[in-house]
Length: 259
Image (cartoon, rainbow, N blue to C red; front, side):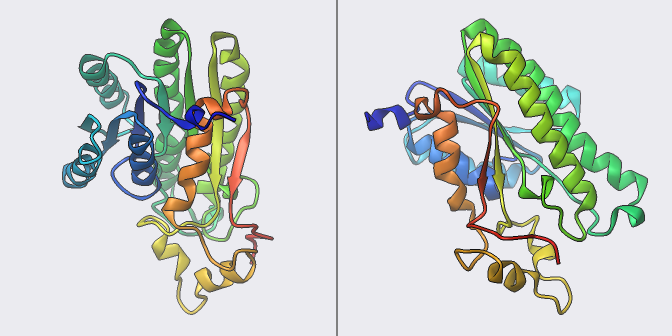
């Protein structure tokens, strides 16, 4: 096999939630593989820090402050990306939220709306717009960063699980519809991963959820953000050129997430 198929030279990758966590790890990985990067997130300070890391690798980086659940912000993101970079070859929808860690029956309506608007509707709006650009370009790759919670729900993240299940379904529908245009769509499904968003849930009260999850994982630990890089690069590159409509689980061999 020609390992150059893992390279992303002359590609432009747009990554939401790209300033920290899994999004940041993917952005740095793709930059290391030769891609120019656009990162979108809500906090400019974090965007600037990650942008500096990317440019230190010798790649161009555009950092755009974006609320990925708002159509006006997404349109602004695409407009700036096309003006600065001229194309979008890879889209990684990664921005997500889970403002309430509680059972579904105790979830407030505002929390349901916040989760669905960002985790699902935001993915729909952005992928819809970018797919039209990719269609005109002759192809592209869309990756949704989902979660194993979509099919193995955990306590306290019920609404988040529902949103991630919707993402998986949306990716499969898009893969079916867009394959004829040489656009591949897949989902990367991390297991429990150490990020700013998951840290409160991993250590809840005396349960020490991180330790419990680690006991039920073949690798004996939860994931670090860097553990997602290789899988994302495979899906984004020509190494995975015949892979579409799939969910790639990266969970360290977890047995179950239900306690």
